Image 1 (cartoon, rainbow, N blue to C red):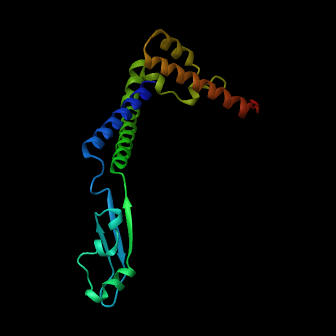
Image 2 (image 1 turned 90 degrees about the vertical axis):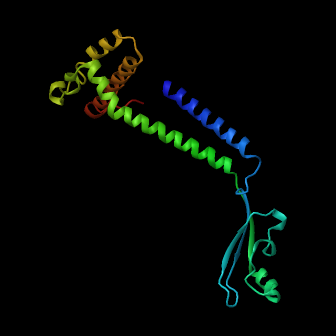
Image 3 (image 1 turned 30 degrees about the vertical axis):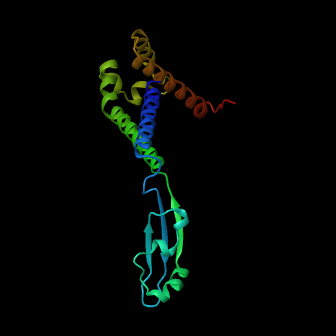
Length: 191
C-alpha cells in the first residue's frame, strides 16, 4: 500500500512538473514544427536533406532549400524532384514520458536496493540468524516450514507493518508448499 501511494505521488509530481514545463515554454517551441525536404541527386549536385522551421503553407522547396544548389533555370526541375513534408511533434509529451519512465526506473532501482541490502538485515534482526539458515534436512519432507508457527506467533505479537508483511509471506509460502505437496505427492489438483 505504501509503495502504491508513493508511486502515485511520484507520478502526480512528474505530471505537475511536466504541466509547469508546458506553461513556461508556451504554445509551441520552434523545435516542435519543421518542414523537411529530401532532394535526390540532380545532374552534378549530390542529394541533400533540408530542414527549416516554417509554417505549413510555406512547406515547399522554394522556401526550405537554402541556398539553392542549382542555377535559376534549373530551380523548377530541381524542386519538382524534392519531396517536402511538414512535421509536428509535442515536446511536452516527450518530456512527460521521459519523466515518468525515469521515475519508474528510479523506484525499481530503490526497490532492488531494498531487496538486496535492507531486507536481509531486517530479517536477521527480527527473526534471528539461525532461522534464515535452515536446510531441507532440518525441515523434513512431511512438515514443510516446521517452525513457521513459531515465526508467525512472534510476528503476531509485534504490531508493526513489516511483521504483518512477513506473516503474510510466511502464510503464502506455507500454502504454496501445501499445494505442491498435494499436487506432486498426492496427485490432487484443485478444480
